[in-house]
Image (cartoon, rainbow, N blue to C red):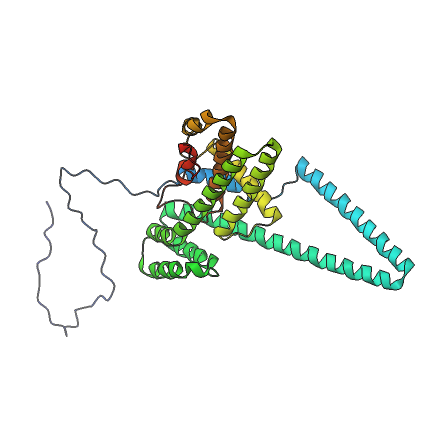
Length: 349
């Protein structure tokens, strides 16, 4: 037999038998009215990180974020650098002592030049260290953006967007985009939407500039190697253009790579190309060979020029993926056919 609820009763507020409970009322469970024909909605789970983004993260960990290990190669280069430093120091000491033996004024001049050399070397080391630290921060920012967007983490998204704005605060051309993102950060609640707004406003113009640099480099390489009389000149020109392209893309996205920075970027780019399987993201090697088949039938040299252009564009796209401070979410990552369609049509434009 079920108990009936108590019936309402009247009472006076000044009655001493009446006690007032000031505690908060218990929250009633929310009820959802659902039709019997509607499917039961599944529980929302954090989105998985895109497979292409995992390859970028793996490449960054193997290159930019990795430490110099103490393997056989590390021991070899450490010993070589130590011997070279000792040999140079001994030579400089003997040189200054010899100058002092001939004339005190010559010895003083030698000391001054040695001090200038040491000051310049310290400045270069500091600049390389700062460039490596900045490059590492960009790589860490990229990985953190991917995780925050997958988890739809609002607080993490706000922190990361603030760091992204600070990264470009010295770039006058990004002033309007930075103001737009800062305004959106105060209004948007969803973390994933905030990251998408930041990517659309701040990074899309930089993507266009980087893709323009890739297209120009691929065009130069394909044209020059097609008319170059010597294979050794082709190799030198292609390597120089790739180094220039990687440095330029890093600068577009906020990096300032020096010599060691370029070495680490090269390691990351090589790892990214190896992980993604060779020629291009979204373009198989068969499609590329078919695309430049018309050009290769015209002459062997033109075919070599197109292949070198494809290689340059592929390296540039890997550099873009590595140097970008956030993963592609709003737009699809570009492929070789997007940045250099002239290589597939056989037109040099």
